[in-house]
Length: 68
Image (cartoon, rainbow, N blue to C red):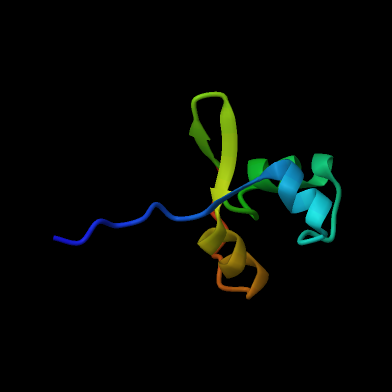
């Protein structure tokens, strides 16, 4: 039986500090709210994204969520 490793996660400060995003923190949260950036996952008090979601967004593969 093979044990699956959890998917790597990345936090907002890591995204912003690394230069992976071409915008500021307020813009990040606005885009999340609009649905044009993936929703983060809450793990206790930690907010993070799956690295695969960020890669999909960077490659233009993320489909924006429609918000009413």
